Length: 247
Image (cartoon, rainbow, N blue to C red; front, side):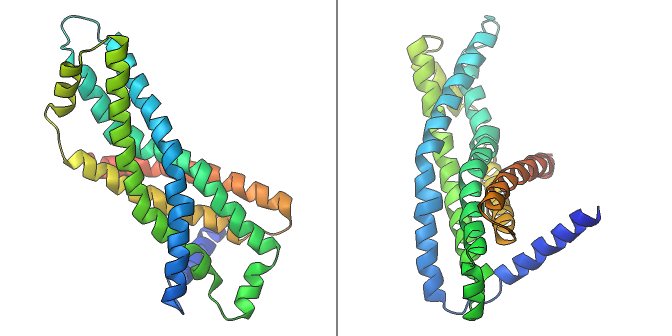
């Protein structure tokens, strides 16, 4: 318990340091643009591929579990739409990004720590925490909602392609289903979750890397911890946010 409280205290003190006023905003702008590419654009491919197959699987599973003639066919499209919007586009994508982006952040900052680059920044009077972490936070907070919208779109299209090619639903029924009683707030709910998850992934991963002690072996362990801890906290906040936003 004491160790947990100590780590929590270090985490919040690091966040306070991260959000302190930057010395040269122009430098932060360049760093943020770099992180947009490194953490955002480079993640579009994997999110699109996984979302496509998730949408396809959801459609086929829904179709095979609603073969009873009592159920109208358009429920397949409706189920795919709501599953992608409410859960898969935000939570599953966040868990994927925790593995890809989180490990990258932890290993990058951890390597800088063990090679004493962070110490060099501190000696030069640079706020190392803000300089290294704030651009990453800004990039993920702004770009991850775009990834979520891509996941929703690609997943829904994947379901349509899989359903029509497999012959389990007609194109007209699927399109009617994804339009049926659409609730725009579900998109807002998904984006709110995405913003929270983006902050968790970036801050927790950066924390693990920033306080690494040792060598390359410890950097690898920090990357693993970043993925595990981020995933656990994401799942916890998923329950909390769902209760708060949908109840």
